[in-house]
Length: 94
Image (cartoon, rainbow, N blue to C red; front, top):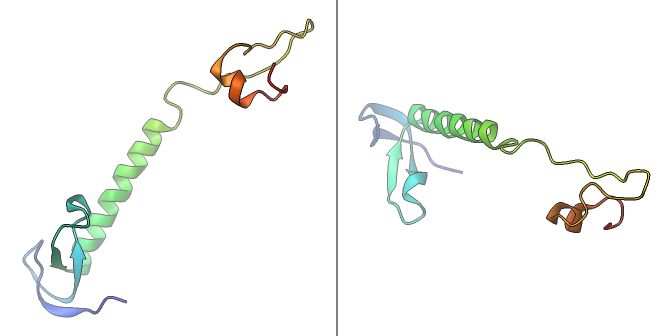
């Protein structure tokens, strides 16, 4: 558990009673520790969550839905010979 203390927030420069040592995720694990207030940590988390939601919306199905694999009356698989068929064929690898 992080121990809170008082002082000036390194990010917003306001006096706060809820500072904790916190790394800037953009600097990675080698980055320094900052004394950051709860308000700045909340803003950072909300910013990251918004960015992730934006990425999730963009990457949901960038090329459309997965093609369906089916066999017609002659036994021909619609995905025969494709990478999709080689790996995910529900018809036993046509």
